[in-house]
Length: 256
Image (cartoon, rainbow, N blue to C red; front, side):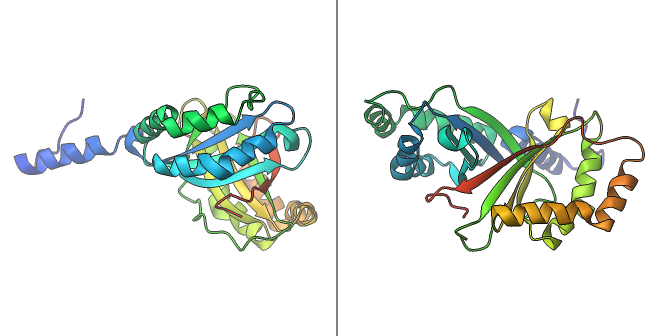
């Protein structure tokens, strides 16, 4: 039960209640990571639909496009689109998707774009996320023709996510920058149990070759090697190998 400080006047107490109720997790700003898998030969059709229609309809219904990417390695490079949207809240996301799905313009586009067969091979995957307190702004350098993005997902042992966050906040991001890896954003999933043990982030490399060289230099860095040992004296953070997907920004992506 919520109790109020005894020193508050009735008016102040009411304001306090409104403030507390207003800042519920459901009303906080959220991001949505979505992954689409297409039927064979349909990725170009999906990209065309996003380029010409979907992104504009997202904007119409209050969904802000952050970035759109296609993995660089087969088979995902031939059938997968990964993107991130920003919503004002979970309630706003629900309302926006409902309005989008019932929009006559979307229904028309969806029907016309699939006259030769369904585009998606299965239901889209969706993960709602919240920015970490150490995530940078979304501003990235100018588009580079060879640039690649890397989506990475870390899953921790129980109770170790705060330790991983501290290491990123105090050391890892600075070392990424040292070796030419540009941080785009860092998130935690919004829902349990993943919110308790998972870190999702995207970094940008100047090229695939640069990515390989940067990671090698990072792992060989004496400061990093010391941080890894000292930060895990009470046990390893990760319960499995990090998931990594290299991606190229689409021509209609806000982030390039």
